[in-house]
Length: 419
Image 1 (tube, rainbow, N blue to C red):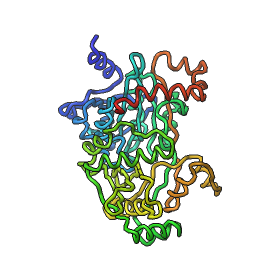
Image 2: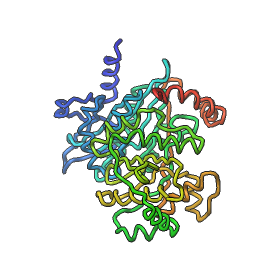
Image 3: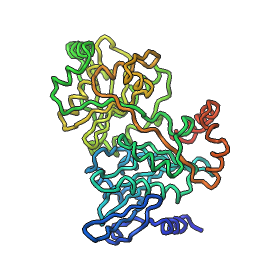
Image 4: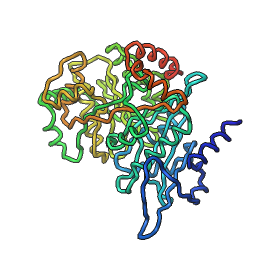
């Protein structure tokens, strides 16, 4: 039986409606289990609530409009991000919930086949919901999980949004478990550092350490200049990032050689992706790739050639990006990646000292507030998956032996087209 027919049966069975622009004018009331809610749109009037599934980025424009107006939404849930990931083997699927034909929540689910017998799913910083709408978090999460169930995924991993702690109880009610490090995705941020940009520049400078302020001023005196890049700088950003990874002895991520060019084509031309290049006498020395979305600038990737250390190019780069974000209307600057063990120690008033503490010290010297983020959760919707986990597979997945094995498999399948 063709997949499209099977998919149609599953969608109808689970209460989903395939997304088409004209179908948006039709409404059906559906039951959202396991969460049961009594929702009304007015005195004595039942609200019309339904789930919509969309497989086409063009058809997800309504979702993007909702995202642009939803506080706390992340770029990783946008249709442009889904289009980008589609270039590297992922298939984006959107599911959203409408109340009286207005979107109140949902998520983008990425799926990918690993060989012939396994398909995984990943939700990055989702689901998303409108906190002003009663029950929107429950409805959005429930619709997402029904979609994952309908696809019989080998497993699905969910990285909740920064504000997603409350959604975890719903995941647990669906028998989700905290994700072992062995399972993809690895390296997802579980702590971050946020700077409030709604204060003036003098207040932002005062929050920085004295050493950082001195380094910025020294770098500026020595001629470090930072410019906003364009698509032609994609190769420079990649090369500088790869040089930084090589010095630290880690594999570059993303590994695809053309990723930053693709990023610019899908997000850069709309102003979501931004490149910043720090130069000395016209020579690119360090660079940053940032994502601007929902009033937040996220410092997504940074690279440095390792040259001109005495000119403090990285100090100047970070300060100039912070200034640019404030001047262009961003309310928050997000460093994105802080080691969670470091964040916990610092929040307890302890000092950290290990091979990575220099990076943490550098970031925290710019001020801001540390935040611990929700843990990742996963579940198998394959017929034999839950049984295997109950028989001890979950413990095996948390072992170092499994981590090493899956890293090799993951690098083969998930980092394809790296050349």
